[in-house]
Amino acid sequence: MQLGLLVVLAAAASATVKEEPCQQPLKIGPCDALVPRWYFSAKQGRCLKFNWGGCDPNGNNFESLKDCEKQCCARGCGKPCEQPLKVGPCRAAIPRFYYSAKDGKCMEFSWGGCDPNGNNFMTLADCNKQCNPCLRPKKVGPCKARMPRYYFSTKENRCLKFYWGGCDPNGNNFESLKDCQKQCCASGCGKPCEQPLKVGPCRAAIPRFYYSAKDGKCMEFSWGGCDPNGNNFMTLADCNKQCNPCLRPKKVGPCKARMPRYYFSAKANRCLKFYWGGCDPNGNNFGTLSECRQRCGAGRPKLCRLPKVVGPCLAAFPRYYFNGKRCAKFTYGGCGGNANNFRTVGECRKTCRAQSILVSTELLIKQLTSADKQPKP
View (cartoon, rainbow, N blue to C red):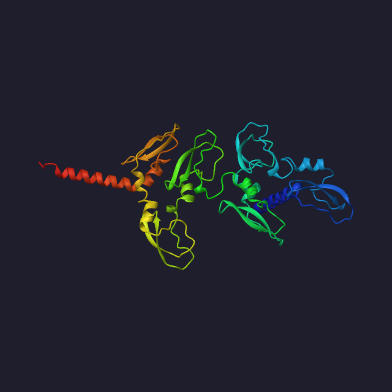
């Protein structure tokens, strides 16, 4: 019985696939007539004319352009990334992403919930994958010319020169450095962690993190909500992962030298010696113990001793800090402040646990010593 049901369902699914005419390939057929017809090209996202042979058609075969577009262009014809922003007539507020040709990047918008066009993506990643040429790899192409061009390197976060073969480009191919930077550097080129703090011209107060080269650490700030640069991270963890060399793992590298170096061990919470191979370092690599200590400090317990700082701004974000004995709640203003500032009590306890134990131990010793000094009856 179950096997029969599966067969029926499979047949139904197969029929559904076959009945979707716009996804079927162009089919001229075996006959030799030249009948003008229209088909939908999934690659170009629009209806194109062709000469049908006159027999054995598939579903992607229409007598007129109007018939083809009526069937296949419910979400708009043309390449999705070239279509305009379309909120639609409904009044929902569903977060979606579209590609803005004017800004040269994918941006968020609130979709009304009905009647979308093709330039409507569920995630930023989907939009970038489809539309953003700057995220495509360098492509020399199969031809043998050596034409100087520029492409955007996501690894180095800047435009670099390369020699194009002369055919089959992929979009990440610009005639000049200026053209490349105009298209791909709206958020600033260069390594994100080296870019300056940028609040932006808008007036929201969204908590974000940036890497301060002056202070050598990631710090919180209030972002205005538009026109960010690359040094703008949603979480402290994201910022540290990208920018803080002290939180990167020990890396010996692929070379075979044995050069004595020091790295900061987050697990041991101190600087340790290791032997570096001599190439491909990752930043957590210091020539001397004092350099390592100066750059990475004594580790996390230091921040737990910092005082509570509300900061000069007037937002009201609930935060936690370690007050010397336990993690306590306070209201953070949204800018300034110091590292003794945690989003959750769990994050505070996890970071300052060792300091808490030390305080409790010292308090216990003090109480026991005090009890011993009391006169005995």
